[in-house]
Amino acid sequence: MPHQHRWHHPLCLAPRPLRPWLTESGSLTARLIAHYPCFKVRVLAQGLARPHDDERATLGLPRANVRVPSREVLLCSGDTPLVFAHSVTTPAAVRRGFRKFRHIGGRSLGSMLFASPTIARSMLAWRRVDARHPLWRKARAVVGPLPARLWARRSVFYTGPDRLLVTEVFLPPLFQESR
Ligand SMILES: C=C(O[C@@H]1C=C(C(=O)O)C=C[C@H]1O)C(=O)O
View 1 (cartoon, helix red, strand yellow):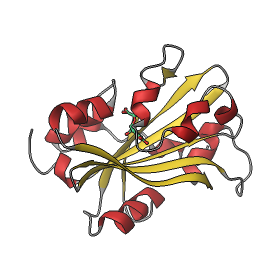
View 2: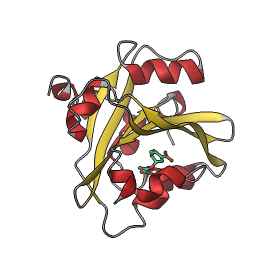
View 3: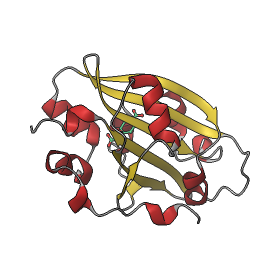
View 4: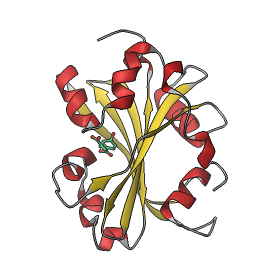
C-alpha cells in the first residue's frame, strides 16, 4: 500500500477553526447545512474514471488502468466553494450495495449514506495535500488559486462486501475564519 502511510498527519497541525470540520463523524453535509443556509452541491463529474494511486489499494483494485465509478462535487455556500469531495467505488458495488450512487445527481451523497442503517463507516484519516496530489490539482482547476497546502480527510463506507471511498478537501472559507 504505497501511499497509505501518508494518510495520518496529526490533527494538532491543522488550523484550529478547521478541526471541528475534520473530525465531524456524522454527515459533513448536515454540518455544512447547519452553518451555511445557502448550502448547495455542484456536481463536477460523475462517471467512470481512473482512481488515484492512494485509492486503489483501499478499494482492492489491482490494475493501474482500471476505471471505476467516480463522482466529484463542490459543496458550496451559494457560489462560494467550501469542500471539494471525490468519491470512488467499484463496478460491482454500484450494482449491489451502492446502487443509488449513480443516480444521486445534485443531492448530497451524505443524504444517501447516512440514511441507510446497513451502511457503516470506517475511521477517518487525514493528510495535507499539495500540488503533487491529484486532488489538490483538481480543486485548483475548478476553484482557482489555492493555498499551497490544504487539509483533506477520507473514510470508507461499507455495506456487505462493497466499499465506497470518500475524500474531502477543505477549502479556505473553512479555515480562514472561525465559525
Ligand atoms: C459523505 C458525505 O457526503 C458528502 C457529499 C458528497 C457528494 O454529494 O458527492 C460527497 C462527499 C461528502 O462531502 C457526508 O455528507 O458526510
